[in-house]
Image 1: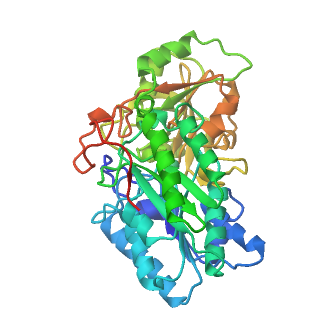
Image 2 (image 1 turned 30 degrees about the vertical axis):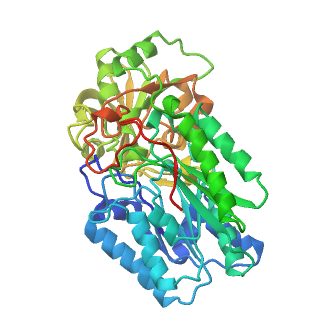
Image 3 (image 1 turned 135 degrees about the horizontal axis):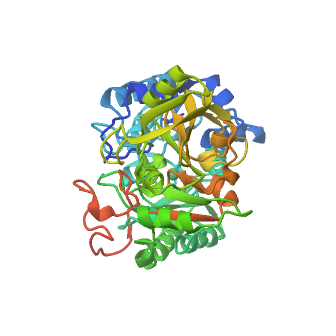
Length: 495
Ligand SMILES: [Zn+2]
């Protein structure tokens, strides 16, 4: 089960009942139907049944879009329901939790640890608890102490959610059978890498995860994880964390976690920043670009990183593209009001609208456009190929495609979905390869989908609730000292 949420404390819109209902709460066998054929964490938990030694009973799972913190009433209700389901099913041989690791609820700054501790209270000390978490969680010692096995993804974009969750579930199954009593260590690294530096195939982060692969070759090492940390949740546990799980020796686990911590710490200067273009420079680059068989330029809209909790309606790049008359420019925006207007007008109709930037004032201004409604759809699509975090079924709500005079094609969604699948556009009859430039709102999450078709990816330093320049964020709760904001002393063993 799991209450999987990445919470951006710099976003004012809470993850309230509506946001959670938009994502859906899946219970019992619904979880299996929804996730078993995906490549997500839940699918990895269910995979352990194929071993023939364990049966998995799904209880409850919800994966609301990243946004502001979880509203207090929603956290209380969902966690109470999870605990009640767990209590009703006692006794359990083991518990598997799919938490993100960067969840914040009103009243609970460490919502993930809160869930794990409540689970521990119900099942007691002897029942193994496994947590499969996202690699950019802010993992706390509280969470690690309350669980037996914590496994993080090892790729960003996340291509291995299913594999890591299976790893976690298989270890818990072995513990439940009495075969294993492993030792888990945690080392805190007092730094937070910039979001632009969190891709695991880019140096220097690549070297950190390379060291992880080395550590896994140590005899008796069952698992190891590097959690990058999440700079948009202003919480006391914000930091990188390195974990290691050894079959018997806490000392060996500590040595491994310290090795990983030292590698990450040594790379800290290279994890502060990477070059990103200003929005105006990115659009100039698009105008200079000669479209060809290698595909479009993909502009990564860093400030409106939907996977990091932003509204998905930034018009910063669209506004310049309209002004500079960029031909063949594709962008999607969450704008339910504009969708309603398009639906009222009907396919083929001409409309004149202000699109985007309606959720708040941090992501540009609504942009006036005129054009023709090319397509209306229910916004549902499916992608069986690898996507970020392994999701398969998507629901963008009622959707309209607006071909604007002068060049841009604007896809208007009613619900928030990340730009993580080419099917978002193909299901609407648009071929993303044929555009000169596409805006993908995110930093790493769009890369699995877009890297294979992009001539080049351009990181664009747009303003917004996930802006790359962390010095602009008004932190109140993060720990101090924390690199790169302050100098710090280096890795420390917490467990
Ligand atoms: Zn993630």
